[in-house]
Image 1 (spheres, rainbow, N blue to C red):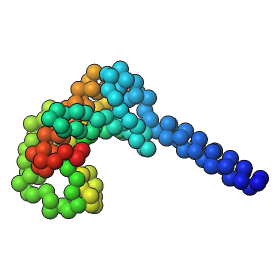
Image 2 (cartoon, helix red, strand yellow; image 1 turned 180 degrees about the vertical axis):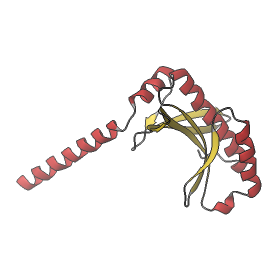
Image 3 (cartoon, one colour; image 1 turned 90 degrees about the vertical axis):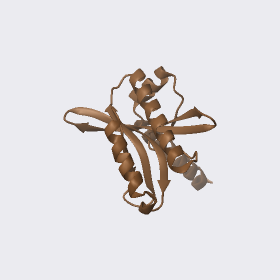
Image 4 (cartoon, one colour; image 1 turned 135 degrees about the horizontal axis):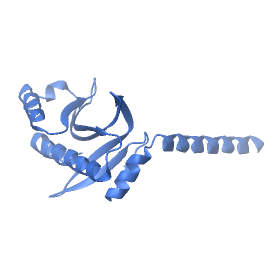
Length: 163
C-alpha cells in the first residue's frame, strides 16, 4: 500500500513539473497581445500559439505564433507561420510551382514562402518574422496576413482544406 501511495505521489509530481515546464515555454507577451486583439487560441505542448480562422466558404486556416524567439543584430524576433501544403516527396513540388513561389516572395512587403523539414514530410508554409514585442494590433494583422496567404495557396495547389 505504501508503494502505491509513493507511485501516486511521484506521478503527481511529474505532472506538476511537466505542466510547469510547459507554462515556462509560453511567452506571456504573445498571450497578452492575442488576448488584447480578441483572437482565440490554443497553446501547443511546446508553448506555441495556434490561432484558427474561419476563412469563409467553409474553409479554415490555422496560424502558429512561436513563443521561442531569436536574436539578430540586437533585435529579438519571432516567427509566425501558416501551412499551405504537406507532402511526403520533394518531387510533389514541381519546378514550376517552386519558381512561382519564389516570384511571389518578391511581391510581398513582409513574409515569404519556405519549406520546413530537411526530410519527409516537407511542409510548405508562409512565414513572417516580426519583432518579439510587436503590438497586439500589428500582430493580429500579421496573423491574418499569414492565414489568408497560406489558405489562398493551399486552395490553389491542392483544392483541399487541411490546414
